[in-house]
Length: 456
Image 1 (cartoon, rainbow, N blue to C red):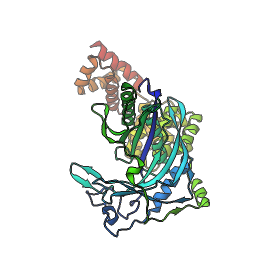
Image 2 (tube, one colour; image 1 turned 45 degrees about the vertical axis):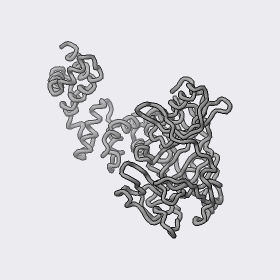
Image 3 (cartoon, rainbow, N blue to C red; image 1 turned 45 degrees about the horizontal axis):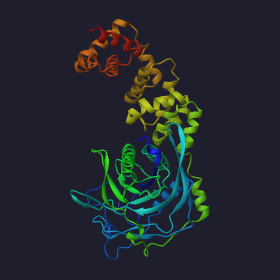
Image 4 (cartoon, rainbow, N blue to C red; image 1 turned 180 degrees about the vertical axis):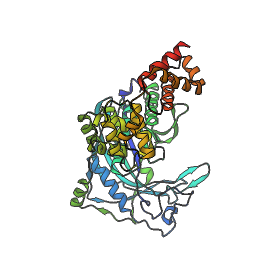
C-alpha cells in the first residue's frame, strides 16, 4: 500500500453474479455449457422475444440488501441502458437507474484488527453482457442475473478496498446469494480513484477480479495520480498485471451517453413491507456476528475471520462445538487438517468424529491428523484408532531410522536445506512422520532430524 494513499478517494462498483438456475429475464440456464448453448431468444435480442423477470433473483437481491442494512424501495421499475458492444445483441442492458432496489446501507469490515464501515450508496438488479474473446462472441453469460453494489468514494487505499470486498464475499456465501468466486467471474469490481485535492479527476479501473489484484490496481493508480500531481483526465483504465500498472482504455462515459429510458416490457416490482420484514427474519447469523461469538468463545481472531469466509467450514465448527469440542482447538483443527481434506467437509458424522479426537487429551497435532485419516479412510472410531496406534514413539533410535529414510527418499530437499533453505525442515519432518504411520513424537522427530542435517 502506498504510504500516501490517505490522500486518495476510492469508490467501488461491485458486480455479483447471483446463484439462480436461469437468467434474469430469460429461461436460459446459467450452468456451464459449450459456447452459445446456454442461450434463449431474449439473450439473442430477437424481435418479439419478451423479457420475463426471474423472481428468485429479486429474492437474492433483497436478502443481500437487508444484510447490508439498506432501505428497500417499495416500487422498483427497470430501465434500459444503451451502449453498443458486440457481446450485447439487444444494444441495451436492462438495469435499474431511476429507482434502485435498495439504498443507504453499510458493510462492516476489518483492516489490521480495526473495524471499518463502508457506506453503500445503492444496490440494484441488472443483467450481464456476453463475453468477447479470441474465439469470438459467447452469449452464455448474456442476461445472467447480477446485483451491482455502488459505494461512495470513502475508501483510502487498495488494502481497504480488498478487505471490504473479501468481507462482502463472506456475506454473499453465507446468504447463499452467490458463489462469489472472483476466479469464475462471479465477483468483479470497478474502482473509481481520485485524489482528495479540489477538482481532481476520477478514473475508473474496469473489471478487476481477485482481492490482491484489486488492491494492487488501486494502489498503482493512486501512485500514478500522485506522480502527475493530480492532472489525470477522467477515463476508464485497465490493469496490466505484468507491468503492475493501469493503462488507458477510453474516455469516461457519462450518464447521458447511455440514453437511459424506462423499460416498457418489464412491469415494476411492488414489494410488500410485511413480506420484506419476514424475509429479514430469515437471514440468520451473518459473518460479522459469527466472528464476534467465536472470539468470545476463545477462537483466535484471524482463525475466526478465515472460517467465517467459508460457510461450510463455519457451520462445521458450530457442529463440532455442539458435539463437545472446545471452540478454540476445534477452530484450529477445522481450519487446518479438516479444510485440507476436501472429502472431510461434508462427510456424515465428521463433527462428532472431530469432537471425539479433540477430547483425547495430550495428543500431538500429528497424532490427531492420523486419527482423522483413520476415520476418513476406514471409518475407524478415533478412540479405537488411538488404542491401535498406541503411545507415540519417543525412542531416539526408532525416530532416527525414520528420519534417515525420509532424507534418503528426498536428497534434493536435503541439499536445499543444507544450502540455507531452512523451511525445508518442516517438509522432511512431515515425510518422516508419515513413514512412522503417525506413531512418532513430532517434537522429538524435529529435534533429531535437525541435528542429523546440521551435523553432516
